Length: 87
Image 1 (cartoon, rainbow, N blue to C red):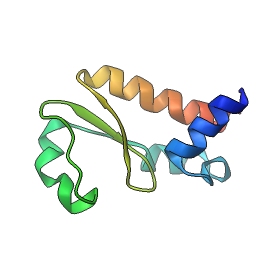
Image 2 (cartoon, one colour):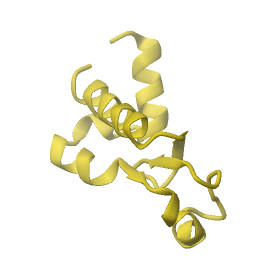
Image 3 (cartoon, helix red, strand yellow):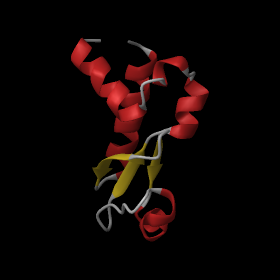
Image 4 (cartoon, rainbow, N blue to C red):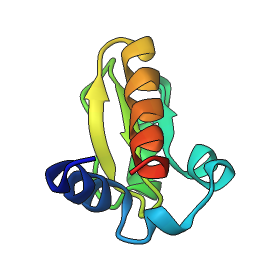
């Protein structure tokens, strides 16, 4: 993994992401369906994502990406986890 990729992972998933195992990352890096959007203000500090889109969140409760297609969101989530576990 290049330094650029490592920096991206740390910025997105938190600096201590490399200290966690796959179970933790699978539990904490999540895809949120569009129907959770209206409840997002309670969890994500005054932040809602575009209506009808899927959001990906990280352990520090930040939404880091939006996808129209659920499959794309899930693939990106797994890629993020893979890059965090396999530097």
